[in-house]
Image (tube, rainbow, N blue to C red; front, side, top):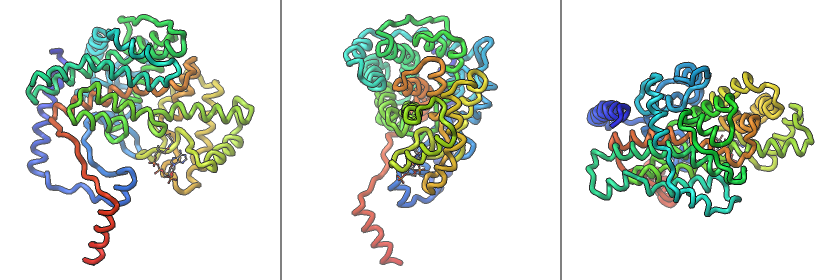
Length: 439
Ligand SMILES: CC(C)(COP(=O)(O)OP(=O)(O)OC[C@H]1O[C@@H](n2cnc3c(N)ncnc32)[C@H](O)[C@@H]1OP(=O)(O)O)[C@@H](O)C(=O)NCCC(=O)NCCS
């Protein structure tokens, strides 16, 4: 067993004991009341999950084990001469709960590099799709194909004790994360680069090697990938991809099956596909206005038109956040340093200047500020990664770090199968009648 795995087990044992005590001593304490509106409207704001890896504050944004994005950018180890955090370090932080040293990060990089070999049948599954298939469809299918490798499923069928589940889930999570960049790059090169594939370079970090396999050797693109794969990794537990992975995992479906469920959720336009939608929306605006850099007045008119057509302005709004997403700001800061004169990026910034008051004036949009997806596509385009329907795959590779480290915690803490109660509207009507007659 590697030392990170041993350390994880130590931490999880302590946390397990603490949770036991919390439930024994305070299990009956009420957290909050739940309204019918919340039940009908996407369970918004109902606290019903424990996710140890990160916590979202609606005004401050995400904190990973207590660290904000600016703090992560400062404190996590980097490549020599680099400025951006290594996602390996964030994975360690989410898993162990402490900042990693350079040695810890090197250990994770080495482990992932050693396990990155993808079995041939996975490529055959990808090859069986028409190249027109959406990259997320190919990505989800490839993850399912990888499931033949699950150590958890094998151990479970051999009757392993429940106490050991976490160990096999940990192994599967590490192997799956190791292989995702190769799969994603394979889908990219097959769909957009005539199937001219690039061999992995095991000497590079996880993100550097991913950029290399995608076909991008520019060092500042590699830095962007390190930042991108860090900031998209986790957003506490209630978002669709995290919740779906956790829910499916609670049935003791192995990490491959659980992660595939998360990824099919990420593929939705209101969740991870929004990054693709943002670029399409800007492209359509530029085409309609016949300008590569429309003025703020023109942008404002186009936003109003989008709203009048009953469509969403992609990249704006959030179910929890009520301020500008710090993940948007981190990308903006990166762009200011690396590519401040790019016309698409300047358009993203102009949208940021004019969209919030317009969205706010509708009176119904709870958060008029940009989210992570409002900026990411413009940066990728700047470096030549122009194929926007691939962007959600990049998001998915990153999201694996959060949801799979969480899955390790779920099993190490022995969380049971998730099974909330549902009701019918008929039940609600009866309940309301009864409440009326009592009053
Ligand atoms: C993220 C999102 C799904 C959150 O949904 P939510 O929690 O229901 O948001 P709200 O409570 O603010 O929604 C209230 C109303 O405002 C609308 N709204 C929210 N964001 C909007 C936007 N960016 N453009 C237009 N309308 C928006 C909703 O569709 C809803 O309309 P309805 O009452 O007619 O159904 C939503 O803001 C959205 O669709 N944004 C665009 C897609 C996007 O960027 N997704 C990525 C999220 S990280």
